[in-house]
Length: 125
Image (cartoon, rainbow, N blue to C red; front, top):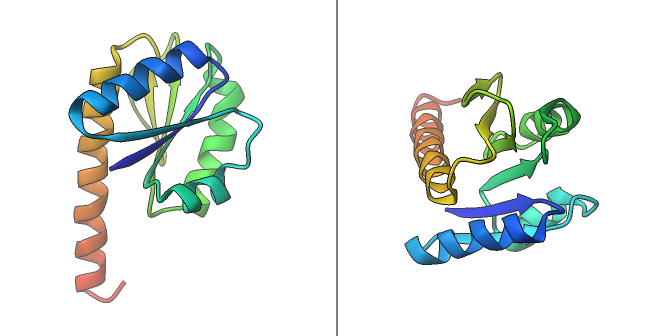
């Protein structure tokens, strides 16, 4: 799994990247104003996480649009004041959960996406 973390909080990006290094998960951190789709393709990322930095509503629309356009990727939002879970096609996680838990949850979601894609392709979808 290769994660693209979209955040303007360098400290948070460093924390998640360090946690990824510790368990062998590549985490690429980019600023919020960057063009995510081309960066995802260039980096070979298959998971994209948008950091809402406290306001999930501000990012949910962008993340939902991105998830619809890129169904092959797991797309998530980290924000404060949210309950963990899926909101349509976007995985929403509380931002202050530890970085290890974030990566573990993303890894589980990524595994589920790969299984679903394999099942769809085996029946001709």
